Image (cartoon, rainbow, N blue to C red; front, top):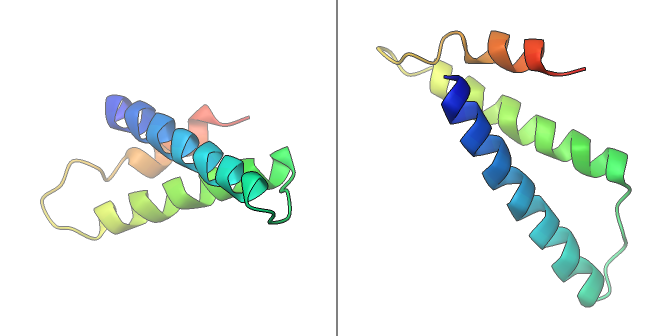
Length: 71
């Protein structure tokens, strides 16, 4: 579970920064770093929730691990 979260946080972070970079290059409003962090956190919580709904997965403790790793 921890390895999945680490990989997924990296993937979501890179994707979010890429979206922000493209937005800035094409003239959309810039988002603050706090807003980007909230966006990343929300995407990760949504993914964990979708994985928990599947029966027979080992991701039941993923939300606990995610919340315990945050400040």
